[in-house]
Amino acid sequence: MQIKDINTENNREIPAKESNFLQQNPHLKSLTDHPSFDSQKPPSPELIDACVHCGFCLSTCPSYRVIGKEMDSPRGRIYAMDAINKGEAPLNETTSEHFDTCLGCLACVTTCPSNVKYDKLIAATRPQVERNIKRSLPDKFIRNLIFNIFPYPQRLRPLLIPLLAYQKLGFQKFFRATELLKKISPRLAAMESILPEITADSFQDNYPTVIPAQGEKRYRVGLILGCVQRIFFSPVNEATIRVLTANGCEVVIPKSQGCCAALPEHQGQTKQAHTLAKQMIDSFANTGVDAIIINAAGCGHTLKEYGNILQDDSEYSDKAKEFSSNVKDVQEFLANVELTAKLSPLTEEEELTIVYQDACHLLHGQKISLQPRQLLQKIPGVKLREPIDASLCCGSAGVYNMLQPEIADELGQQKVENLLNTGAELIASANPGCSLQIKKHLELQGKKMILMHPIELLDYSIRGVKL
Image (cartoon, rainbow, N blue to C red):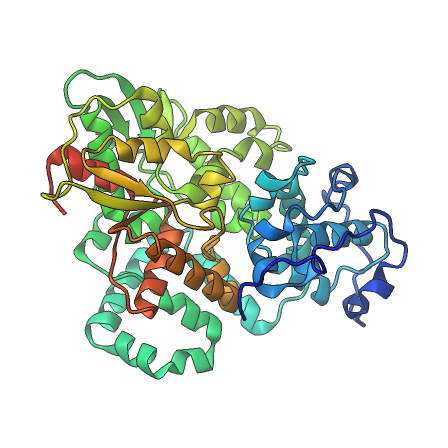
């Protein structure tokens, strides 16, 4: 499977109104049809009608570029939503597969000249799929494993000891060399393939509730640790704390915080997402912070969507809006308040070339692109290079690379090639999922290249640490 060029045949215009949808797509019909979406907030006809089927979204859609089929593009999925709403197509295992292939990267939202709210449409469709489509046992097993472990650090942390033994005793090398796990379950193999190295840092979870600012206090901010982030990327959290305090911020870290709800929300697990979002809101209630800081792109987008996620909850709707209005990506926050700490070069060399990797939910979801680049360029000697297809998803997309490994691998391979082709010495990535995906494909291509969060580079520069 390869990323395809967009041609005029694939970019053909679909009529806005078509009565014979099943005749055009006979593969969608099966004996296990569900007649339509259920009554619980189906995709809005008004939002669907905003799509004029122009096809601008096709060239920016990663699933379409890999699969090359109209039904696996935003335009095709919107057309399917419309047909299901009207009873012209069923909601069944086949139609749901086309919704499942969507990465939720939101590139189409950025591209669309008609301002179609595809993000809201796919967010409404995924819970419909989860409620009405019976998953296969292997699919159900993987999904239950993901959603019952990853969003809960207290469940994930006890697994670190057996995972450490798995790595240190050579089992990881054996399974990867023989590809035995891939033969048993491609999805389990995909999950294992992005497992980062377990280190002593992974076991750390002893942050004070309040960490004072260095020098004059300018702001009081809350910090969200994340779930996967705090386990596998704790150095990023530590660097975030040091950079914030070095720039006059008192940092508050509530002990009761958990997962931001991004993983379940992006996959239609509505009840779980609502529970986790409410817990997060309660954790930061009455903390008196000026901003709530997050350093993971995917988490940040969901945190800023709490007002929409909990809009029908009479108790939490207003709280959710207020919470979301205070959420800031750490790079967004620092660029706005400006750095006060002195920065030093990261190497002894005159220049360090860096390529910044745009995380989809930072670029397309939060519209944050310039701020990370501006901060990196404040570091003496840093020169930025831009990759081809910078806005194309790397294939991580939350848990997508575990659920759709073949498509994700094609995208990951292309992303790494584009990053390497810049000739940069270091990759800066502001999302843990992207970092895991890129590291995996660097290794698969036999390439060694440093990958760090931009906040880690700022921390090194402030402390005078050399790469």
